[in-house]
Amino acid sequence: MNDVALRPFREEDLPVLDRFATDPAVLGAHQWTGFTDPRVRRRRWAEDGYLGPHDSTLAVTADDVVAGLASWEAADRGGPAGGCFEIGLTLLPDHRGRGIGLAAHRLLVAHLFSVTRAHRLEAFTDGGNAAEQKTLERAGFHREGVLREVTWRDGGWRDEVIYALFRPSAAS
Image (cartoon, rainbow, N blue to C red; front, top):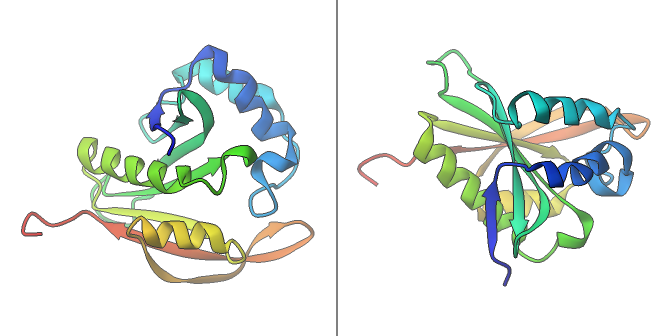
């Protein structure tokens, strides 16, 4: 088993971030939406290290090697600010299928419930991404529904599945 952790991105990690903009295999068929300018990610890192007040991204590491990224952004749905976050997680291809994603999801959930006032965490995934759906369920998320033909990718409209997880109550 890999020693999985979350940490802020470092300057030496920037070539890995570049791959998310320039290598279709990194995001894969369920997330790739086309080439983007890698300098955008570098500018964001230079601006705030990807640790912003409304959205943040951390490196997922396995045995101290960057294996992917975990992110969250405010998705307030009418409640108090910071009550809901949309999360996301992407692993580099050579780190998939080894339990790293499940461990990283659990770490991200624990982090957000310990340092934010979040009551609800949401995750959206491609309707065809069975592996991510299974991982979310194993991490405690519950499937809430399907948004039909909501995302344009790979020449067509794709379904997205929404999952949610609520902060455990003090009585739990």
